[in-house]
Length: 265
Ligand code: 13P
Image (cartoon, rainbow, N blue to C red; front, top):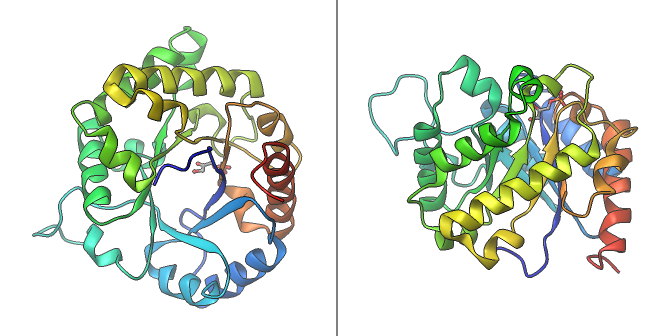
């Protein structure tokens, strides 16, 4: 399913916000305010809000995603959610978010197994990678991201991952929730690193068609800097994705890029 040209994607990660009683209204409002040609919109609410959001955007072209998924298909894992349980509720899934690496001890190995479950269940994964501030200050950012990708993707079939439409989100940890965003040029350089790593993992031509998003304190005010970079294909938005005005601005800017890249009439 990797598209002939790289699509423009704006995905909202609502993290641990909203409840089943208010998520539907928020999703409906955001969907109505972001109808733009050439932009794939995705909302990733908490698990318990997936049904409400799905109902709210049923008549809209908005994808619904989970924020994580378990690495096993079923079993004695109290409190966890397996990929087959998401059928009918989500068509996207975020995998390897830095907050889960930090708080749930997710390793590259586990993240790779989550990708396997996504592939088996036809969920489109958004694989998150990104360095800590100390790594960037030490000039190791590219090395860290390369290692995360190798840890999760080595020996995984590029054709299968391309078939479900793998998306990579570059989210420098120091930029998440801090109000401090990376520079467009740095995100662009990392997108090139990501595609080079994938090429080295046997992706070949598919690496050039892989969408790379930027995430980390994205707002309607700074999104332009990222869309100005030809190797960046969209954004994974955290805090601003809960604000309809912000999402309207971000998706409107994304639509300009979609038109400039020949993805929309
Ligand atoms: P913020 O946009 O709140 O920095 O969060 C980014 C993020 O983690 C999206 O997954």
